[in-house]
Length: 309
Length: 179
Image (tube, rainbow over all chains, first blue to last red; front, side):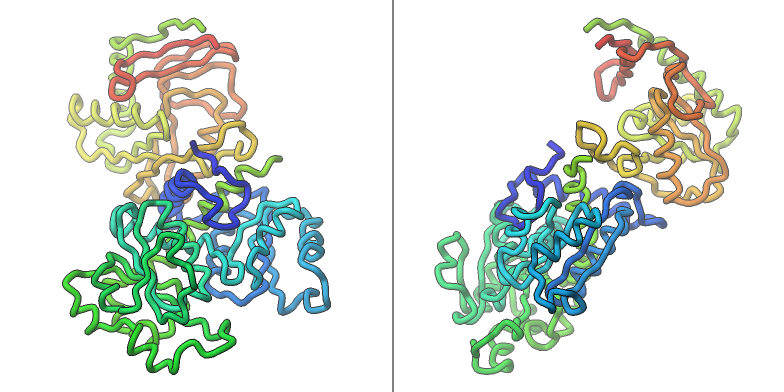
């Protein structure tokens, strides 16, 4: 008990149920810490963390940076736009150069799936995956489950619906793994073109009718349509997507129960979710953001405790 | 492994009442005093003292909190065992209050050092005192001494002092255990 089974957080599929439980229990303590008048603890004052973002990010980057600073770690930031990557340097060279400045942990977002796993095999530092292509985004899935646990008292046995662009979503895959590990049922809903083939092989339900899907679930996690990753047209128009797969007040009121609405951000208001839903009491979108800091503090703290001196 | 009784239930009870009286002597009606039990084992002592003050000495308005010092310890990544956090429960502001830290055994003084840092997150107290049931003499690594002590004992390094509480360990007692 009280130690993670892994030295890196590369994806939810490498974790077990006990790891998730430990992360959540530790996050409970950090949530209390970040609600104190002074929100900082000195645990990681001898740890240096590099945030390497090879892809744009606002929320995740700020959340990681804040989590690291609340733990008193030294933080360096790097984004590929202003770096030598543009000059042709390889990933391993870039990271090894940074590590030779005595960095203990790397938080990395990268457009290529598996970049974190690759790095963990070639460099000597603890790696946290902050999103690798359309593969995994483990801390987002952890904070989503943590938010469900906080709102509904637990994750096991709950019915969770993920709506939208599943095909391009790393959040969806990590969420499926995390929710299944904790005993929740998962259903995916979206245009057939945006649901990966053979996804039913990993034990999730697929439904293309949003009303039926919403009637089934306790929680609906609304995903953004990732236009920037789409090389071809997957649906006729945004207007048609919104008519079929957008959640609005009327639709929610027509259900016979009150469901919880989540969104990993950034929201395209009026596309997958209307403003009156996003800002309603049913939505826990801003709780997710707050919990993100506590969960990332827990992950970093637990991984740092495994770095040998 | 051999063990020897340092204090039995009756002696623990007498000492707790004496400590309660010493607290009253200094803090009167506790209007600007808060008791803080240090996690994990100090909270049993703190809860018990608060109960005695309330029930036996009719002191009203005892403010009692629990402080966890895990994230403030100086042995993160140095100890073999992973550090496990406990709950902090401080539902009041400690600004300008007189704080009494309560812990069962005072040994190296490092937990108290961590607690002194941790409590700063909750404001700037007027003063901080320390109450311990057992004071292990000649074992301090830091210049920290208790203001109220139950019993002072001389213990050599390969011995351990174990304080048991009725609520948790089925009896009130203090043992000296030889490892």
